[in-house]
Image (cartoon, rainbow, N blue to C red):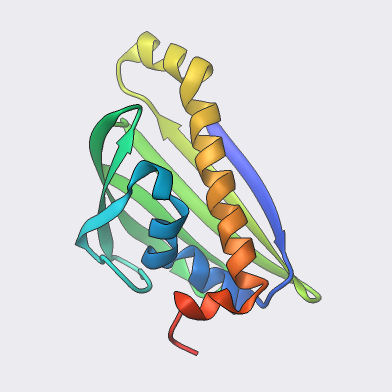
Length: 159
């Protein structure tokens, strides 16, 4: 099972980073190149424990749906989303947050399993791991950009 581990240092309070990471609206903005849209479950605002979202997006020229659920939630330290249905055999994405002075360290541990046995393993090595790493990296850049400026107010209305 491929694993992606990313660490992003953000000069912003942990509460802000935590909420931006679970913002459906920011997620939509960060995935504009895949035309990602929340079509069921929690479709805007902040997603929380036991809530679900179904995304529709275009990857590799093909429209796909992916449904996930927040299965673990410890405000402001971590939350986990897991795939319920989609093109993968499984996805488990744990988001960790740690405050060090004025810096929040946001860590993504993203584990996924492709279907199709050996063919899926080959696809993981040739394409999918890099593709998913790039998607997560771009999303984290946007979280950092919003958190470190007043743009966070555009997507988090709870303050």
